[in-house]
Image 1 (cartoon, helix red, strand yellow):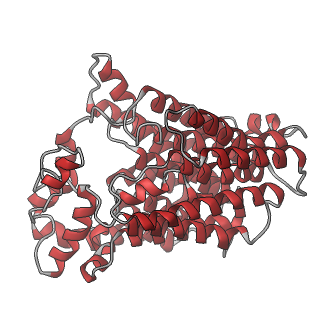
Image 2 (image 1 turned 90 degrees about the vertical axis):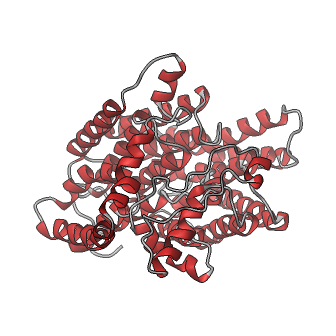
Image 3 (image 1 turned 45 degrees about the horizontal axis):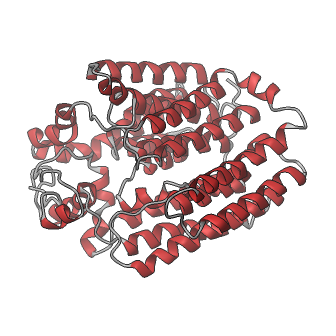
Length: 480
């Protein structure tokens, strides 16, 4: 499959729609949120199923200005809607004016050598941080002064979007975009040092237990739920001292937490590295570090973006290093299994990546598994299955349950696996197409299994941006 320029542009639009859905209700199910992620998923599927049609549809001279205008128009629409709120944000008026300026640049400028991909990405680089200014949310702010860093980072991102609309190939977009991403994510970590979420508690306590010589999968979690602080914040979830958790890769990545470093800095560094890899190929794609969901997902210690980073490292070139990166993804979070069909196409008949993948996963997993097989199996596998479908997850099962229907859990997983395999079969071995197949497989999991929130969709959107950045040939070139 040739995942060309037109398909990449449509895939980017799909990523934007998915991200927009994640902001409707903080990533929880809502009919409008589901509608957005469905539109985004359909656009992403269209990009790979009909790439030639996308190319033809976006080949006319009229297409580039309209593609550039998507981001500014979307931001202007959001600003107008926000102005009608009972207590509009003071940022509404400046955001609207910046959107109008961006629209003027989009329609009047004619950058040389512009592609459909760069046209869409330039407009979205304005839209993403602008949307964060208007719709972004932090739940557990303790240091109000640090929120200024988040605001200034978003404003810098908006300024870069205007710059990209005028000069999309400007290399200065990359370092400045990384600086904006660091201001946003770093500001969140400082402003909200102790979020009320069990993910953050586990990322801190599991590495500490390991360094004490205790089995992290047998420890009793000191849960932030069920406490007076949680009740004051309106969180009434019961404390669970033995919740289902994650593969051991996140324990190893969280080891700096034992020295007092917030584990979210490790995740933020992963997003910055991903933004650098994509921005080197297309400067405007530094927007992967400036997603409108960045602040909220950073606060909540969600680390799904690391799956996209592992995929990006695997697709730099085939060989053993690709297998190590693929194995790292499997060690980070369970839905990485959905990446295996796409990686199978990338590995081809080369046995080296498979051997490296098995050695990576086995070498890290076996010590924890042999330490206490029952605890490991419960925390990483069976405990998640026993939870069942989540009624507030952003997907089709929640929609069906709201109408009194029953969605069998195995059905959703089997359909997601079938979709991942079908997308990989369709993709073939080109790097960009493999990334597209991985994104579609993860989107299918999100929609069909009743377990996904905004962080899952954020990772899928990052993979769609990766697909837009990668080459179309069957194998990535040596070097990057």
